[in-house]
Image (cartoon, rainbow, N blue to C red; front, side):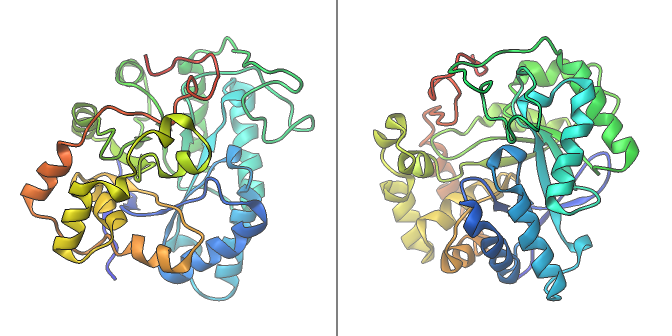
Length: 322
């Protein structure tokens, strides 16, 4: 199977268009799951400190390298800076902790996970920190402006700890502001994108700036409904949507492959997750086939602007998408 790539700016590194998402994998299963994903053919791994399994992701990578399945230079590893570590003095410390947990000298991409600074939680008190201070039930914001955090991210590139930097869950206004002062341009924006939440104008604008885009939650409400989110349970699953099912039947493909291929046709990367080897293979098979333009347009008509990964929906007083 031929992997398709996006060339990143300004590094010219090549990032696989399809990768493997590391969120919501139980830590006790993670090492084996990552090992199996590498064996199947995945080369990009989308992780983060607040996924509570970064050490185990590193264990799986190390197992695969030790068994000769892959070399480090063949992998593209993503980690993320959590909200409690936005201050200048905490950015490098957080990156080093992720590198230590992963057992790596560098990561290929380091993203700011959410565009909000929260009060720092010392690692020895709680790590990963989560959204709240220990014992609290609501978030506590910190007075750290984004330009301070971004300058510290740029310093990580200068030091060679990370090869590329970017962000996740940033809206257009924040991106426009950051592009007015950044020394190193962001290489990647990762946002929620699926047939029910397409953000077409934003995606096209970001790509026009020379910034790559990766989608998370490509299957829409699926994982959120499984996690008990009422907002997601009330929506027809993408796998059951008649338009998706009809297109899947036309190409003799699984509905999940159709959802992934739709993003890839937009030159948007995807990072699906599964603990099943069979599903891993099926998702990876979203590569190397094409959809007719009429089918792409049919999926485009499904857009409802329906977001599932919103801190407000989860009960946090952080209306970052308004």
